[in-house]
Image (cartoon, rainbow, N blue to C red; front, top):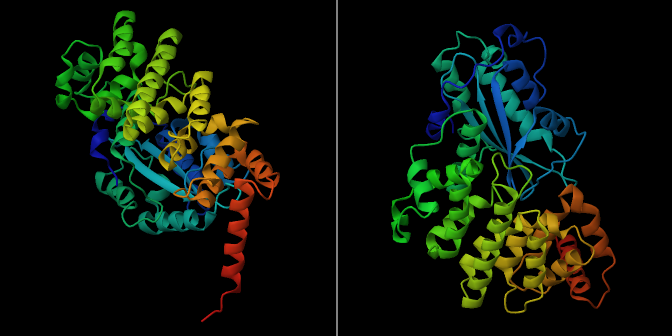
Length: 400
């Protein structure tokens, strides 16, 4: 990765700051990623890519790297982010997908980050600190691009997340939507037959969902109504994208009017519950992940319904709640109910999921207190006892 070809639509974005602010002496150490981006003077957009797609400020990245605060959206023990930056002299932005390792408190484990910075200096030399020069050549940009090859910090997002990132970055850079937008808009607003969905491009769907606030009131109403009628396959594709732009979320770049965002959430819940009744686990989880990420109370209420449903709760539903509906677990009754279901599910990796939740700053103390207060004969207490026995067995095993 990456002079990412899918980001070619971002070319000719507004130029970055002047070269006089970018040229910095090699005598000053390069101490952090935020320091690197500050020195380049490049046009920069940073995004969370963990539990949801959301803008990340350079100040937030700096606070994380200097251990002033833990990572807001830890995912599988990592801080996942996208760095979309365009140094002066380049037409296309460079795109880095980075997964920085976290410690037990959700703070940066700096060793791999520091090794990457060292590689940056070694590979680029003076270029690493002067990439904001107008005379920067494409060959030098290629060096920056190649830093992602064989990089232990690099990761590849899935297709839907890449499409949503492209859609969001294009909008943030005041660039037009992709060539697939028009057809997707026509389909999603009921201007094309329902069985025309195979002709849609995932990027077009992502563009429409990201820019849905630009739809007229008539088209917005048609879009919300369309969700009730969609075949399962396009519904799941839309839900995958909506995970990154959930109904009524504060981080939406271009939301629908409030009433339509509410109706969108209602439609997702209705389709998800219908899938549950039909035993369609794939569609249920797709709708749950999209709806669960919404901050609206209706999303939390649906999670409560599913947690109370013995037939609905399984490992896939629990993982969906933990991954996207985690904000609703900050509740004195819902969190114990979730952890109890998790401890009672033989297919679930209780330790891994509980640890992942505890890394989220707002959930760390509630999770730890819920585990501490669990009675010994409860499912939670028994799960903790099993983990303790496993740890003791491992510690007492002979070394060879």
